[in-house]
Image 1 (tube, rainbow, N blue to C red):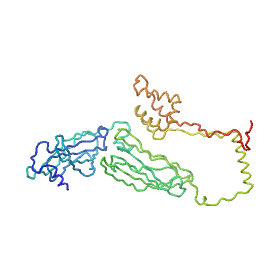
Image 2 (cartoon, one colour):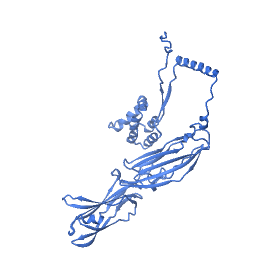
Image 3 (tube, helix red, strand yellow):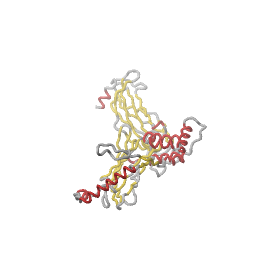
Image 4 (cartoon, rainbow, N blue to C red):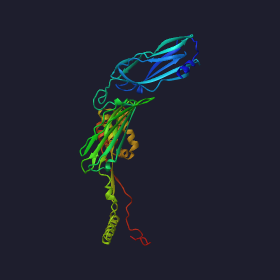
Length: 417
């Protein structure tokens, strides 16, 4: 089928002219920036041929300083040239991953074609032009490809799913629940995903299960997926809090460090025994019923006299945002610090109002905006101190329903004061 398509693409007895056979290699850089080690770069290989092609073979250079994988099969199509003629187009995309920093040159790819040159079969090598590809060195104070912690995870996007069976809050001492965490990263092969996270805390026994990894090939690049598994058993009768686990990753699109989170959970403290639930409720004696009625009436009178007590709630930044603000403060990165706050003003307007009503925070936020948005004479605030103030919890009163101040109109007549 491919041979028939290529033979029909051009006249069978055409002489080869300059420009009839061209092969180009174009790198696609994330954010138009030089990649870091182990960061994906897409190479788009495209050939445009005016001649009828009988056979073809791509000879790829060694790519000694890169790992690579091909994304799907080669595609052939017809294309119209600027002069109106129809030609055959060949397309292949491969993802390459540099091993280390440096200035590299990607040697020519060669498309070896067997064509019909004036009625004679002829083998022609069509080379691409060498491509220069610099790989940058990480210069930020934290993270990077060369440090052991945190794991270097360059990706276009990272998602985490967390599932338990049964629900961890329902298990009791001696029972077991299974946790399965799936980590998925776009623009990465499975070997680039981190090892299984450490999940350990006092009061529970954990048994690590197998780790499965797979690479899913898509037209826009590979997608890496790892599945981590644990069996968890409480060893104490108390509720055991299990802290969140953060996974740092480098966003290759925005060129910033980010964090994904395996959420915190609690082990135990959930549903009662089903056998206890199934027991029939014993009828109460008349004396108990009467005593309960008197007690309820007295409690009602207390509510009439004193009103229903007000409850309070606590507002606070989530753990991931607090860590992000601390990181930007340590790096003296004012724009990053301010960008991390923008989603908070949308998600937690009540907390934002508390900040604006707290003078020390409101003044620091105003000074930060002034230093970022053109008023250079304004002094930049102490970001570390501001991050600490923003991370503090705020306790506010949450009023309940309006308390009843007098007895209801029980007999149809209004109660006079």
